[in-house]
Image (cartoon, rainbow, N blue to C red; front, side, top):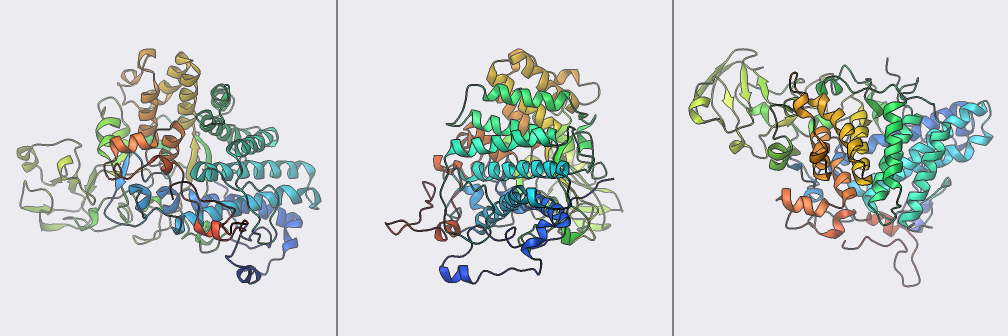
Length: 565
C-alpha cells in the first residue's frame, strides 16, 4: 500500500515566511502569520516530523501541475500549443514572457519556501527533543536532498539565484546572486551528504521518501547538467555514469515488461519508480504548503486532451477526461521521433487513438468529409486516429470518423494518455490523485547512455539505451529495436529521450542542458522560431524579487534582471 507523506498545509513562522516578502517597508511590517501554529512547534518531535513532510510539499507546486508543465514542455521541439489556455509566452518566447508573469513569481516563491523549510529542518534538528539521533540524521539527509532538488530547479530555470543556507525567520531584503560554480558546489555537497545518510535502498519502506538511490539519480542529473556548463569538470560525465550504474545494478529497480504498465493508474508503486511526488484522494493535503498557491492534485490529465467531447457520439466523461487542450504534439514528435511504429510500441501506448461512443444516436459528421451521417450505438468506435493519411475512399468505408494528419489542428490531435485519471470524483473534477514520477528507471538508463557517449564509452552506451529500446518493442519485434555502435550518437539519445519521456516535464531542461534549445526550437517549433533568442535559455527573474531586494548606491535593485528581459 502506498503511504503518503502528505500533511495538511500548516504555517510555522520561519518555515512559512516568504524569503523576501513585500515591496516596501510598510509591506514588511504588515507580514502576517496565517496560522495559529507557533514557531516553537517545530522544536517538538511531532513538529519536526511534520516539518520534514512539509519540506516535500513544494514539489507539488512544480510537478504534476500546469505551472510546472508550462515551464518544462512549452517552448520545445516536441510540443506546440493547443486551442485553449494562457501563458503561451513560454511557448512563443514573445513579449508575454516577461518578469511580471505570476507563474514565474509563484514558482520562485514556492521553491524558496521549500528551501527555507529544509534549512529549518537542518538547522534545528540538533535541539529537537524526543527524536533519536539516528532519525534526526535520516531526516536531515532528506532535507538536504530536497534542498538540492529545489536549488537545481531554480538554477536550471533562472541561472544565478540567491543561495540561502540558513533559516529565514523574518522577511529580508538582503539578497545576492551566487555564481554558477557556487550553486553547483552546494547542490553536489548536499546530495553527497544525503547519499551518505539516506536509507540504503531503492524505494523507501515509507514509500515516497527520498532514499540513497533517489539522491544518486538526482546527483547524476546534476553532473550531466554541469558537464555542459561553464563550470564543467573533466570527470562530470564519468561521475554521472558511475551514479547511474549504481542505481541500476545495486537496488531492486526493474523496468516494467510493458511500457504501458508504467503509467497504469492501478500500478503506481512499481519497480521502475526511483522517485515520485505523491498525491492523494485528500484534496486538502494535495495543496502545497503555500495555501491557495495551487489548485491541488495532479492535474496533468487536463492539458494534453483533444476536443473529443463535442464530436458526434461523444460527451465529456471521467474516462476520456476533461480536455483543456493546452499542448499538442509537433510534427517533429509525431513524424520523426515516433516514425517507427512497426517495431516500437511507444507511439500506440503514448497516444490515445480511439474513442468509443458514450452518447449514442445519429449525427452529422464534423471533421471527416468522407461521410455525411453517422449512427452510433453505445461503445461503437466514434473517432479513430490512424496516424497516416488514410485515403478518402478507405475512410468512407468506416462507420466512424477518421482523423488523419491533414486534419490535425489546435483542437484535434493525437492525445497523450500517460496522465489520464479515471478515479476523479466526476467529469468536471480538475484535481487528480495520481503520483507524478520525477525519476524512473528508464530515465536513469538514458542518462547513463548519454554520459557514456560523452565519455567515449560507446559500447556501454549501446547496452544502456538498448535496455530501454528492447522493453519498448512489440512482441516479436524486440530484437529489431536494438541498435549497434554505429548507430550510437547524441542525436539518437535526443530522440530516444523524446520517445520515452514525452510530456514528463523533462524536455525544456534537456534541451537547455545540451545547449540545443534555440537550435531545436528554430528547426521544429515554427510557432516560436521567429522569436527565440539565445537569452531565452533562462527565465526572467520575477519582478517581485527585484523589487523587494535592497537598492544599491545607484538606486537600482542589487538583484539584477537576466540579460534580454
